[in-house]
Length: 108
Image 1 (tube, rainbow, N blue to C red):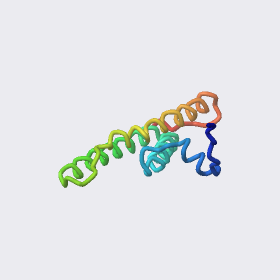
Image 2: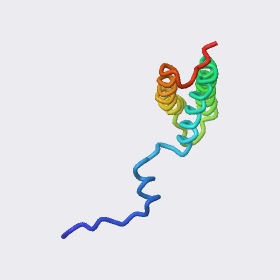
Image 3: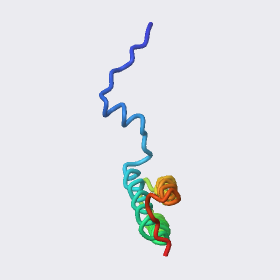
Image 4: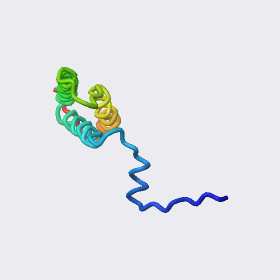
């Protein structure tokens, strides 16, 4: 008996490849890119926005735990890491461009 591979559409193949842990991961990734862009314009601002996001996620986890929401999983730390893992490489690329003299990061 030979197994036949099922034919997937391009969109299905991409979605299976990504296998996101939840639907809001995309928003966290975009937030990480946003924080990198803010860091380009004013470096401390990107860190401040990451801190605000961390506090929101901590508050959200605490609130959901208090309400004993059904199917609750404390994932605030993972949400923050989603944003952080995207921000760091994006900012590293901006830092490389800054060092190369192509653009200027505002540090103050």
